[in-house]
Structure formats: C-alpha cells, structure tokens
Image 1 (tube, rainbow, N blue to C red):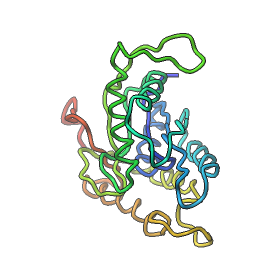
Image 2: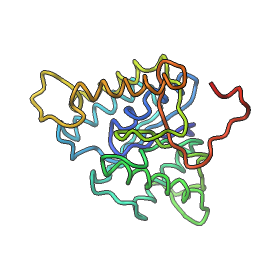
Image 3: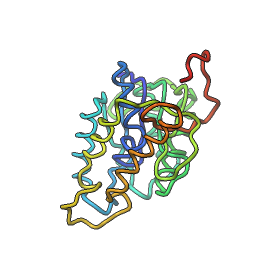
Image 4: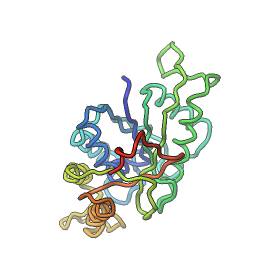
Amino acid sequence: MKLDILVFGAHPDDAELGAGGTIAKEISKGKKIGIIDLTRGELGTRGSAEIRDKEALNAAEILGVSVRENMEFADGFFTNDKAHQLEIIKTIRKYRPEIVLCNAIDDRHIDHAKGSKLVSDSCFLSGLVKIDTKMDGEEQWQEAWRPKVVYHFIQWKNLEPDFVVDVSGFIEKKTASILAYRSQFFDPNSDEPETPISSKNFIDSVNYRARDLGRLIGVEYAEGFTAERYVAVDNLDDLI
C-alpha cells in the first residue's frame, strides 16, 4: 500500500499530540496516512505496554489512519545505528510516502530527538540504490525510495515553527485521539503516579498552544512544524 504521508513517533501518543489535527485534516482531504510507533512506551510510569497497544489502536481508529504499526524498538534505549536505520528504511520503502512527519528535533524526552534524527537519516538512506532491503518473509528486493520532505512536529519544548497548519475544525478529533490514551493523561479518578503529562494543565496546554498558534496566523487553531529545508509555495495565494 502506498501512503501519502507516514508519521513516525518515538512513542504511542507522540503523533497525536504533535500532529493529530494535521493528520485528521489531511485524511479528510482524501490523503492516505499511516502511523509508525518506534517503541511500545514500555518505560512509561503509568499503564503498561499492553494497555498502550490497545490505546494506540483506538486513537488510530478515531483519526482514521490507513495503517498503524509498532517497530518494537527498546523504549529509552534505541539508537541511531545501522540496524535500526535498516528497519526504518524497510518501512519507508514499503509505504513509499511523499511526506514524512516525525518527532521534534529537540525536546525534554531523550527519545524524541533520537527518534527525530533516526527517522530523518533513514529517509535519506532509503533513497540510496546500493542499500539492499527486503521485508521479512519476502523474496523480492525493495526499490529505493526517498520522501520528498521530512517535517518535525513540536512537542514539549516551545520551539519556533518554520510553518504552521490551520487545523481549525479538527481540534476535537485531535483531542479525542489524545484522550484515547486514558492511562497516560488526566484522570481525576486514577490511582496511578503523577507524571509531567498526567495533569489537567498539560491537556489544557495542548489546546492553548494550538489556539495561540492559530491566533498568530488569524485562524482558530494551528499546529507548528519545523522543516529541514526551505518551505516553498507555488504562489502567494498559498499563504493564509
């Protein structure tokens, strides 16, 4: 299956938190989108990997993505090395996306920056014809494929975006996809330990960041991204 956009997150919930509104909007326009989680989030303080597996599937259903897979890399300990790059390359060549979205280039959680660089490097390597890959259990070698662009969503740190996407009308679906991770986020009845993302303030902050970015471009809600190269437009009418 060829996808238009492939979204990578170091942990289940990264894609929803960073780009849930954009994902929902692009799907509403007919785009085929997949989410690839690098780890199962097994080191998370609250819940368990098994619970997050189910939550991730629920979130994917809410957003309407075409596919969601988990690479099952080691949470907290995966590295940007050849073995991990080859697994990402296989996935990129399998789905042949035009656009890749991935973690923030700098963030509070060490996996976010690591995942960002791992995916970005793998996107480049995936275009090299002398790197041979094939999916497990298949005899046919994969063709080289390099996405046109790689964009990084913004997470905990308030990084300056290179561009923002108007997600007005999709913030409710974004929020619903985040709250599908019931074990991770605010629940006044939970007996789990408190974490930096389990407070009501954190969930509110996701909303008011989107609202503030929207305010800055004259819309209701927006999500910000950083780019690895200049963002180009065909004409000035593309700007809002």
